[in-house]
Length: 558
Image (cartoon, rainbow, N blue to C red; front, side):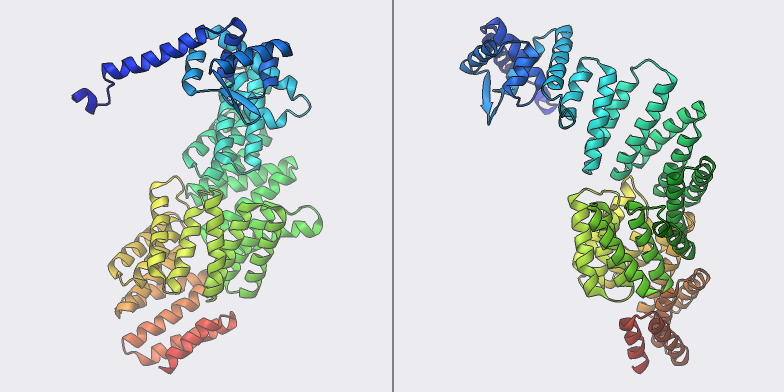
């Protein structure tokens, strides 16, 4: 009984499996020599295949190949799959493969590889993913590297990032078996960087950092300053994902300096792009807007063409402007970003653009038109497995649902976003997700839970030098206190107002004034309440936020 509980096969079970293998082996043993050869080849091909491939790999003439295939079909070893052939059962494949001595398997894999290359010599690219494992099993390491690299690049182009990462890792494993030489070391840097791109899209921060460290060691050994510049650029991105925003900015500045030293205009542009990101993460909204405009200025001069970086520059510009209070330009920048993303056919930037449009509209109080954009962004992110931004898309849609009273739908999304950043590999924007979850919990009347999340967000934003998010977290603590009529809320609002004014965050400033007015009214402090609400209405008017201005005036009239 203990053996059964522990999953140990019983003697009868082992005997049944052995008898099946014996029966399959006996069936294969009754085949003619050519048929047995083709069965072994079919087992190694490992998928449905054309007769021409089997014939070419076996080196048989048409008549001999046809006769052997007919025997295999008659004996129940081979079957037709549409217009192709395959072994009739996986057990046959297993037994036929096991019957081949290792040297024979190696040689037959080489035969299959040569056959594929011969049959598809005019257009080999679509067959690289099929070809690469045969080169690997035949220990043709240089060709293994080439084919897995090509297959990985193809997978990356169609945003199949998990498949791409697997291919690049196979290429790296094969590359390690080649004799060491300076040119090979440079090739390895390229492979590590290719793997970095795939892992970045998957949000695999630890492995991403490992491959960059390996690439940096090789580039340092070679004195390769160009690669060191690009590695610094990617390390900036990695540091941002690991929430070390100060290190992200330092790495971007190093990349920028090396790019300017080498006259590498593309590296200069990308380093400036990283500085754009780190400015936003550090809460320097004016710097973010200035960096975005500097990048986009390259379009007018012809130094830059439309692509992912120009879309993201527009979206970061839109996000910064929305918080700085320039609503019209923020909407225009976000819409322009979506237009370019759609023209490029790039789903990642399209999802990012729809998210940005939705968030800009939320900040301005236009909730009903924001929701369809945020729903579309999340649907696209899920469909294309953009795992590292899914928490952002979920929490964004969640806060929109909160604002229209759909709290029961909002909370699962917000809780998932926090859970995925708590236990997942990407922890970027965790404080933002905590703030959004706190707002959902407040709307659900769960004040203590909301306060706990807001306090976590304050502590986290302090630790990670995310001053902008600290301001929003303090404002949430003020809202929670105001909802309970607690005077301590005034302190939270004043702290948030100080940050908002220091950083030019006019939107946060107006939100805080509205909250202060509401709190003062709850506390029976009519004059301070009137002053705060009057100031809030004026701020919202100047930023063209009529819904919030109307709310402030309604409270003034009450």
